[in-house]
Every structure is written in C-alpha cells, then in structure tokens.
Length: 301
Ligand code: SF4
Image (cartoon, rainbow, N blue to C red; front, side, top):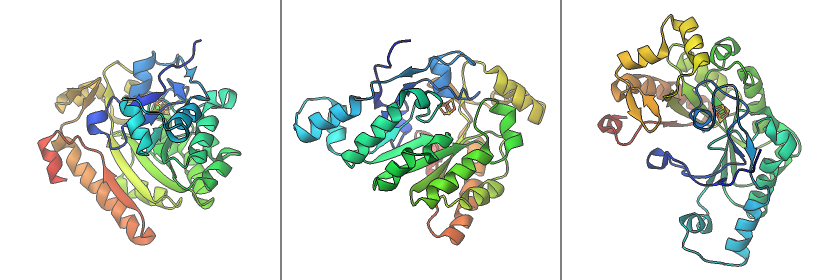
C-alpha cells in the first residue's frame, strides 16, 4: 500500500467548520465506524484502506515556515504562519491501530510541541493516554484532546460500533488524560436519534471525567448504504434509518443526508441545557452546538 500524499490541507466541510485546517497522519481509519463519512469516502465498509503519511512532513513544513522564513503563496502556508490551530485527525483517527506500527501521529505531536503550535486532537483511541503520548501532551501548552462518543453506554454503542473501542474505555481515557492536566473536550459525535441516550445522562457522565467542553453533532447519514448502521438502528427502533431520515425530509448535503433544522433544533437546545447544567458544577464546561450556518433557523439557536 502506498503512502498518503495529502495529509495537510483544508477540511471539505470548510464552510461549516470552525477548525478547517487539518493534518491527518492516516488516510482512512481502521476503527471502521458504521456511520463514518470519512471512512465511507475512502473505502467500502469493513475493508479500510489505511495509508500512513510521511512522518517527517510537519517538521519540514514548520522548519520552512518558521526557521527559514520561506514564503510562498499557498493558503496553507499563510495559515500555518499565523498559527491557525490544526485539527489533528479530521479524516481518520490519529490513534487508530495503524499508529502502533507507523508512529506518524507521534512524530506530528513532537513537531507541534517543538514549535508550540496549537492543535485540537480528535480521537476515540485509548492510545492517547499511553506513554509517550501523554508525556508530550502534558508538556504541550497548546493542545486540546477532543474525544468522540456517540453514546456513553457500551450496550448502545455495540449496536452501531461493533469494531470500536467501547465508551467505558473512552470515558476512562478521558479521566486519565484530564487527571494528567491536559485539556479534554468531548465531541458528542454523532448523536444518533433513537440510539444515543438522553442528553442529561450523557452530559453528567462526560462531565464526571473532568472534561471541560462538549460539542454536539447530529448524525450525518452517509449517502453510501451502511449495513451495520441499518441493522443497529433497526434493532433499537424497529425502523430503517434511511427511510426514517427520508420521512423526516432529510436534505442531501455534500455526501451525507442531514435532518432539517426543525428536527434538530429541539434536541440541540436540550443538549445545550443539559451540558450547561453540568457547567454549574464544573464552572468551566462550555457548550457548542453544531448546526449548519446556512440554514435560516441557525440564527435561532
Ligand atoms: S474513529 Fe472517527 S475517523 Fe475512524 S472510522 Fe470512526 S468516525 Fe471515522
């Protein structure tokens, strides 16, 4: 298998994303979540085609931009020069099984530490709490570890995430990383209606780990049929998820179906209340809710 040649660039969700600059140590993802839009784009379900990127790329890039002060007209270079935060792992999990062998994530973390470059790490992997990653993160003043969960309950997770690290392990990892003094956020992604639990339950469990921020994103249903997701949703609700989304007049956006704002907003508001209620206890929990800014109803949230 060849090398991943485009690890540094912009997210295809550029218009909707607050962190569009991304670096991906791997193309595709060995965790193979049934709903993953990135995985759906890169391969067919169950057969991830994981490619590792060049481990030295980020160090060379930083050296050229910061040490040698080289200038070019690339928009990526301009963003790096301004230290726009990098999203580490936008198209595949940086702590997926391939990291044990290739260590590209380790190399990218060392580069951002050396150049004090701000990063937001997206992961579900427990490896983030292991050595030497945790030591690097403890020393990194500009890193946030953002751990993704669709649910906090193992039984619900097993319906749609057969090959994934269980939520109980993710919650323990969040605790370990937070206890080490590293900033930890939670990405409730995706919220799967009919499968994920009530927001109040989710928020209190996540807050108990020491997490200080939580975002909330509805399931973007991949256009490509996902048999595992269909089966899990059917088991939980007795319905076909594609028919369910169609009945609710889900819209086609990029390569996914998204529910219309009127279906999402009541749950987004409820999740926001639940997360803010935990903020009273934690004082520092911040709420963000993901909703397309192009929809008129977004202004109401
Ligand atoms: S861990 Fe993330 S990138 Fe990997 S398959 Fe799951 S949702 Fe996709």
